[in-house]
Image (cartoon, rainbow, N blue to C red; front, top):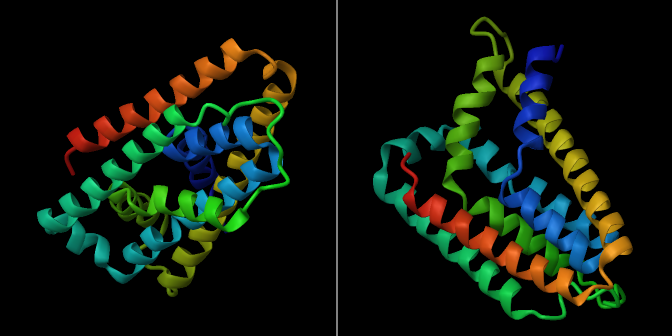
Length: 204
């Protein structure tokens, strides 16, 4: 049985804005509702490798190995900076008339997966978070871990889709303003850059 404490803690973690939320919201604003759903799916799938690493014990290796952590961290910083630059340069990204006809789901999902895949903090988070809800006497701990992981992923997908749909609704109402478009473009670019800086300065 899934405990209320697990659901509550997971909800707080998922709802708290991070790089995945930022990417999903910016996608909803710039490309529409369907694109935000694909972004949310990609961000959710990006947590799978971290959960798998935790289940296989690789999280402990990463925690002990400073080099592995630093390499993955630098890759994550570089990718966030790439997103910042691309968002800053794409002046048509938040245009109200942008067409969804050219939507390419696979590249969008790929970007979202990479965003979470290249964040080493997620592996350490799952190593510290999920085991707390598995009793030492549980006869099937791996099954329990799998169920908790699926529930967490489902909550992540649901909340991120909601964020994206709300962003799309905002887009429909006010995206006719060039001033708002430029403000959002620069704001999201700055936010991606700020997250890159935060990750770069983070310690394990």
